[in-house]
Image 1 (cartoon, chains in turn blue, green):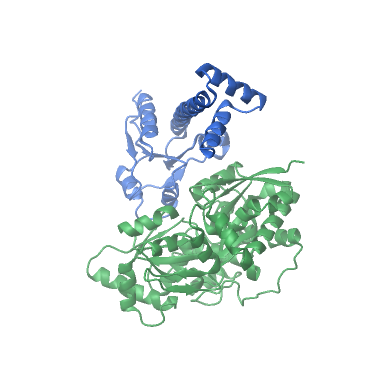
Image 2: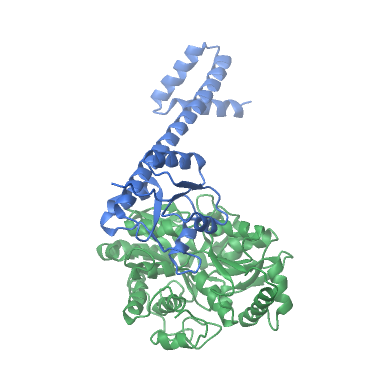
Length: 196
Length: 388
């Protein structure tokens, strides 16, 4: 069997990391003709120049409305483009919207092929979202640690406690008041600034 | 008792005011509705999330509600619009260079759209003679009042919007930057973006769209038709909450509070003063500080603005036909008119329908014959520039 030539895929995404993750996934899956568009100025001109079979765009991107213009009868468009809207496959559309990605395809492009591209998009977008969540969590933890350390310092100085004693005091207060330890720490900092 | 949970999408524009105020002031809660607002970045997102059921209702471009119901350019999902969020509210802003060029060619009152469109026609002809690139006009969506208002205006002055200039879709937040960088020479957009361009000294407001049409349905509260049928009580409550909000907004004593609320980062995220100007219809129109005032700039509740008018829907459908977006058929016309539901509005608010035709024809276009919502084909025949 002669392999079909790889379809041309354009990724429209201002986030270079997410675009790279998606591009890598597509290449691994054998889609070798992938172009990333990260600049939204003159987006349509750039798309016409690439002349893709499939366009993938993230839903955080206001330029999605620019792509909608391609549905319109226009002399500028060489090939008609439609959104991937197979009404029978609502689950797939829902999953892609949940993941935050949308696809536009050139009319006549094979449905089985777009399905695999969409599935890949969804999993890569979700992976990216998880990565970002983790990063966010780590950042928050780091910030909370700083707040707790500052409050510990204040207690040690004011009440002449050791580091461990200061921490135990905050923790028991947090448990008694059903609050997070970082909230107690924040109130200590606020209070000490007010009383300065 | 916890309220009925509703997810409602919106785009950060001043004409989302009735929705935002209905939620923020607790009017929706008073109707037993627990609304979560979702700010979106594109009309495509709002449409898709409404269509898929991720939103129960949405602040939507009136023509998108019609296009969705007709299945134009996208999936066919029947939408109903039981509340009109705003009439008018857009403006055409031009670059200082285009403003100067139009002024130089202007023969008549600058507020007369026929005079400015004819001046534009001469500017376009002169550019063509010099071999310059066509002027580029930005608008917000293929199925938008902005698109139709620009086209209606320039075509009246003999400028063909598809042949003589280029119309391009631009997300509203990018309009100002695109005008500054010269990617577009003009744009038609809603508030606050025209004022932002004027304040930055890079744009002149040439027209309020109310110069072009006295009444144009701009945004609607949209829900899926099956949803409306399954949840009549919830929908009635939602309409009443919006009606209360619209009345609150139109009371001038509340304007400062409303401007401050809408300006908040989670809603529009702009200066309250800019919002206030829009609500008052008092806009700075040129960087030198010149102010123009109009009682027709944006109508949210007054003059029956909130009551959906099927004549407006018919006019919007006629524009889709005129510009080749939709084929003409009696069935499509009747579907389009059926999207706008004054009956739902009347029964929810308990208000009496207004006497027929407060304005002689409900649209009030500056050019062409009085709009006839029944004989669209004959009506369109009177416009020489058209795609159909």
